[in-house]
Each structure stands twice: as structure tokens, then as C-alpha cells.
Image (cartoon, rainbow, N blue to C red; front, side, top):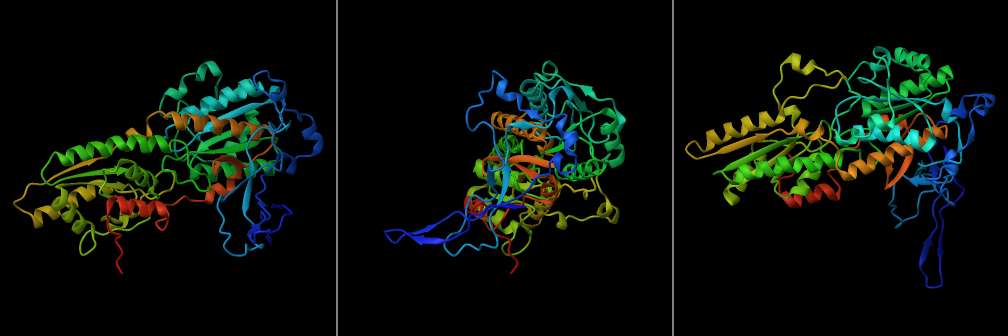
Amino acid sequence: MAYSSVNVHREEDGDGDHLISIPKVKLQSISHLADYLPDQTLQTQTQTNPLGSNPFYHAVPGFYLSAGDVVLRQSTLDLSGAFPSSTPPMAYLRAGPRKQIYFEPGRVRAAIVTCGGLCPGMNTVIRELVVGLWEMYGVREIFGIKSGYRGFYSFEPLRLDPKMVDGWHRNGGTMLETSRGGFDLHKIVDAIQNQGFNQVYIIGGDGTMRGAVEIFNEIERRKLYVSVVGIPKTVDNDVGIIDRSFGFQTAVEMAQQAISAAHVEAVSAVNGIGVVKLMGRSTGHIALHATLSSRDVDCCLIPENEFYLEGEGGLLEFLERRLKQSGHAVVVVAEGAGQDMLPRTESQRQERDESGNPVLLDVGAWLKAELKSWWGRTHPNQLFTIKYIDPTYMIRAVHANAPDNLYCTLLAHAAIHGVMAGYTGFVCGPVNGNYAYIPVSEVATAKNKVDTRDHKWSWVRSVTNQPDFLTT
């Protein structure tokens, strides 16, 4: 870690106002090739950044960033009391071009791989990595690794160029194909070494980032001239530290269509209920943001907030009251919500997917069955209609919308600049609106959960008037 020399102190100006200086900053260091490679090895490829002579880039003052350009992890501080000097705010290196680069573009062989599930924007990231490397730095050896991590040792790399990837951003999914699992550290690093790759761009979620940590550590152990960068991808928005993951805004936008359909179905029936299941294995960000965006949702159920059905303050009591008031209701449920309530066989409890995660049961289908059973018991002679909509694969398989496409472009360029500057074992992403370089080991273990104590969840409660489901 590096620290600045500015300390916290208070002063009074002429009007008696308290002035507080900026506290010293704790800079999270990023690994660099120079940390483990000898100087004579680095000197063979180190040179001045060619962007300065590129006619399409105007290297005006401030164009190149320095080690002093940082991004604060937290943008707000409570200055009502004395700031504890022992805990200075965390900061990360700001992403962007550096004046010195540690790769001779003519010697670069770059590999791009996509892992895990689908997410809007994956093809945009691939496209912009290829175009950015080609157009900004003059790299001509760019390869796609097919079918995730196993593709390093199972398939021949696919040569990529700007003409080939030109329209990829208009397609959902990943043109490189993807898969879960298949992580064999030594086979992967052997393939990187044997293929002569010296830049590796890894696009994936937290499990993929954990694999990237191992790949980086092994490359460092072997003292290879290879930079590794992770580009965090998760439609659930559950990667920690960064503001949001690419594809998330598209997912929320697409979720509106499902919620609107459920609302139409519910309004058009006597005692109609629409149930919409949205993605969110361990976090409820899509459900939360879709609820706030829609305003047609009567109850939002997420993994971070347990709920129950029967009794005072339960979901059934709430829906009974809502049907009496308005004649219809819409329930949005994240796929990971209420999993502890679903009946499971012993084999189902032990079941894991290819990434090692517990296999989730269909909470939406279970909830639909429970609501039908409840109504049949308590209102045997009254009309009741329930429609269940599961748009999961429709949402994650579409191409990115305009804001996500822009985000993916900036993300890809930030990754390229960092790798060309010799940084390795890092992730790039927006922190408080500014792109930063973060150690991949930190991102791999950080989770972005919905904080049910913050204002955003309070807003959900105020919009829906749903119960808090507290049992005490």
C-alpha cells in the first residue's frame, strides 16, 4: 500500500467556520511486470506510448495519467466528527493511458476469453478490445479463446481483426462461445506460454475472477512476460467494489417488459396476480431496480430480505389486503429469494452446477403453486387468476442497450491502457463514476449485496407498501 502525506486537521477561518483538509489517502497498489521481471528484460519492450504520435488522438496536457491520479473508493465522508487518521480513505489508480508502455505493439499476442453465463454487452467488450488494440496501439496478433477457460487447452485460438468483429456489438451472447467450469490451471498457463500470448483479457463473473487470480499468480511464479486483466461481467450486478457491471442496465430495461405483461394480465382478471421471476442468485439488484423503475409492482422479494407466507405480517396477508383494495397485484421475486423455504430432497441439497454453486429451485413456480393453494383454501368459491412469467433467458441473451454499449467501450479501452502500461493482475471498472484499476484478488472476493438498511430499499418499501417480514 502507498500513502499520501496529507493529514487531517481542523482550522477556523475569519468567520469561525470549520475547514477540514483532505485526509491522507491509502492507495491500493496494483501489480506490475516490473515487480518480478528484471530490468534488462523490460528494457527490450519499454517505449514511449505511440498514442502521442497517433493523428486520431490529441495528447494534450493531462492526456497521460500518472501514479498520482487516483479514484477514491468512497465518494462521501462524514466530517461531523474528527476523522480517524488511522483509517485514511481507500483509493485506486485511475484508469487511462500512461506515457510509458511496457509492450512493443509488434510483439503483442493478445488472447480474449469469455467465461460463465451470458450477459448483454459481452460481444461489445470483445469488439472494442479488438478494435482498441488494433487502432490505438497497432497490435495485429489478437486471438479469441473459444468456450471459456477450457478453450485454452481444447481448441485452436480464433484470429480476430476489426473487420471480423465489426457487427458483433449488435448480437446478444458471445461470439466466442462460453462455458462454466473447465478450469485447469496448469493446462491454461501452459497453453498461454506455448501459444506465446503476452496479454490475456478475461471476461467473466466472480468465479472467473477467482480463476484469473490463480492464473496471474502462476504466471508471476513462472516469471512470464504476460499481463493478465479481468473484465468483470455479471448480469446480476453482484461484483463488489465497482459501481455496476455491464449488462445490468439492459437487464433492468428488459425486465420492464415482463413486469408490464404481468401487470396487464393481473389487471385484466378478477383477483388477478402476476408473478415475475428475475435473475438474482444471491443479490436482488435487478428486482430492486426493476421495481423502482416500473411502479406497477406491489411486492419485491430479494435474497437479502427473508420473507414468509403465513401469519401476521406475511406475504399472504399482504396480498389479501391488496386484492381487496385494488383487485390485482404484481409480485417480483429474484431467483435466489426464499430458497430456504422450498422443499428439497437430499440429492437436491447436494446438487451443484458446473461452477460449484448450489442449484437453485424455481422459486417462481413454487410461489405460484403456494398462492393457488392458499386461495383455494380460503376463497373456494371466488374467481382467481395467477400468471407466472419467467423472462430469465430473454433478458440475459439480448444485445446491450446504448448506455451499456458505451460502458463496454470505455471498459475495454481502460483495460487495454492498463495492460499496455505493464499493469497485471488487475480489474478495471467504474468507482464513483471514474474508471479505476483494482487488484483482481480484491474483486474476486467482494460481493455487491443489496443493503436493506439504505435509502434505496426504503424507497422500495415506500413505493410498494409491502411488509418488512420481520418475525420479532
